[in-house]
Image (cartoon, rainbow, N blue to C red; front, side, top):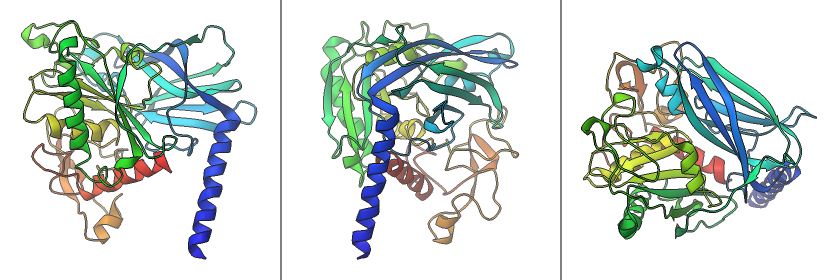
Length: 407
C-alpha cells in the first residue's frame, strides 16, 4: 500500500510540474544576452539582444525554486499574477573581477548569456547580482514580449557527436563539450579527450550511480590554431573562443570572456552545462557556477582538474584549499552559499546531519583561507588533485542537485 501511494503521489507531482511548464512556456529556448559593467564602486546591467532556438533543454519541474543561491539570479514572473514561473542562479567572472586591483582603477564590461524557457505570454524578468557579502550590487527588471519581432531565430552552427544518452531525455542533465584550440586535424584527439573526461567524471560518486541521468554531447568546434593563448609568455593563438591564461593576471586561471561566441557555437544543440576542453599542456583551468568549466588537457592532472572544475561549474562547490589570505572572498559575517564551505563552526553547521552520522566533521581551512572558513573533511577532490573522491559533504550536495534537476 505504501509503495502504491508513493508511486501515486510521484505521478501527481510529475503531472503538476509538466502542466506548470506547459501553461507558461513553449518548447523553445529564449537566449538573453546581457552586459554586466562597472568598476569596484558602481555596477550596472544592460540588455544586449535576444534570440530563440527550438527546444528547451533545461528542467521542466521545480521551476520556481533555486537549486543554489549563487552570486546572481534570474527570475521570470507572470505580471498578471506576480507568481514566479522560472528562476535560476549563477555566478560570473564580472563579480570576481570586481575584487581585483584593476576594478579599483577603471571600469570594464563583461558579456553574459542567460537561457530561459520561451514564454507564451509577456513576462517580467529580474536580474540580480550580489557581492561576497551577499548584498545586492546591481539589479535590472524588464519585460519580454514573446512576439517581439527583434527576437532573432538562431541557426545551428556546429555539428556534434553524442557520447552518452540519458535514460529519460526530458528529465536529465545535458552536458556539452566544446573544443578550444583543436585544429580540424585534431578533432579525433578532441573526441578522445571528451571520452576520457566523461569516464573520469563517472568514476566519482554520486555521478557514478546516477550516470543514466546525464546526456552528453561533443560539439565539433575546430580552431585555426592549436593550443590556447598565454599572455604572460606573449603567445597568442587564433582559437574558437579566444580563451587565455593569466585571467585577472593569475597565471593558471584559464577562461574565455567571449560568452556570446560560446553560445553561438552551441546554438540549437542540446546543452545546459558546458565543459570546454583546451588543447594545451600549460596547467590550468576555471569553473564558474552555471557558466562553464574550462580545463587544460595535455597534462597528468587533466582528469582530476576537469572533475574538480565540474564541481564548481555544475555543483556550485567552493575550493577547499588555502591560496592567499590577502584578498578574501569569504567573511565572518556572511555564510557561503557554496554547500561545502561554512564560516561558522558552531552547532549546527549546514552538514550537521552528516556529522551526526559519523560521515563528516568540521575542518578549518577552505575558500583559499587558512583560518575562518571550514570544510567537511580532511581531504576532497575540491581540495587536492591527488585525492580520488569527493568528500561526503560534496557528494551529498551533488546528489541533492542531481535529484533537483531530474525528479
